[in-house]
Amino acid sequence: MLRCTGPALIVEDDPNTANLLKTYLEHEGFTCEIATDGEKAVRLARHRRPCIIILDIMLPKLDGWEVCRQVRTFSNVPVLMLTAREEEIDRVTGLSLGADDYVIKPFSPRELVARVKAILRRSNMQTNSQGKMLRSGGLEMDLDRHRVNLDGRIVDLTSLEYKLLQALMQAPGRVFSRSELLDAVYHGGEIVIDRVVDVHIGKLRQKIERQPSQPRYIRTVRGFGYAFADPEDL
Image (tube, rainbow, N blue to C red; front, side, top):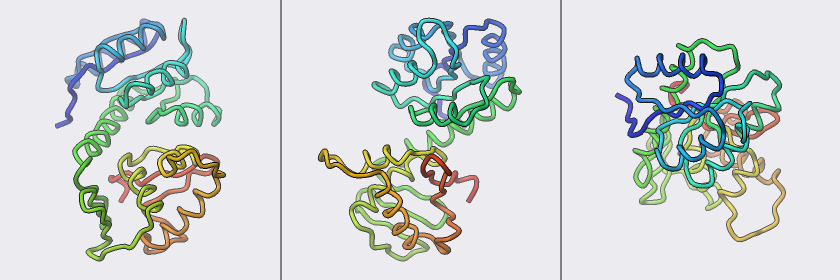
C-alpha cells in the first residue's frame, strides 16, 4: 500500500479539470486540496505538506515554472506537471526545475492517477532506502559502509563515481541534468564544465554495466542528461 502522509495538492485554475482530478484521486483513497493560483499553491505546499503536487503550468499570479522553483527551495515533495504544450523544451524545463514527471493535456484521468501512484512508489522506495541500503536489480549500495556490490562482488568506485551513483539511485526514473549531477558531486565551488559528468558516467558504466554500450542501469536522456532505470524496467 502506498504511504501518503499528506493530501494530494491539485494546482489547476480550471474548476472542471480540478474537480475531475479530485474525484478520481479521492476514489483511490487520496485526500485532496485544490489551489487555483500559483501563490496559493506555494502557501499550501509549505503549510499542508502534501504527498504530491499535480501542477498546471498556465496559472494566475505565479505560473507553474515559478511554483515549482519556489517549492523546491523548501520541499522535495514529488511534482507532476500538467501542460497543454508538446514542445520538448517545456518538458525539459519542468524536469530541470525539479519536477518528477509530466502529463500533456488532454489526458486520461486514469492514466494520471497511475502516474501519481508510480511517482509515489518511487518516492517511498527512496525514503525507505535513505541511510541504509539502495538496491536495484543486482546492484546494491550500502550507504552506511560506503560500499557498492554488483551481483555479490564488491565494485571499486572513486569518490566522484560513488556520489554520482548515489544521486542517481536515490531517485530512480528521475532525469538529472548534467549541472544537477555536478552539484551532487562538487561542493567546494570548483569551476567544472558539465561535460565532465559524461566522462565520469562513462567510467561508472564500465564498472557496473554488463554491456556499457547498452547500459541497463544508467540511461542517457538525449539532449538533457541521465536517469537511473525505474525498478519496474529492470
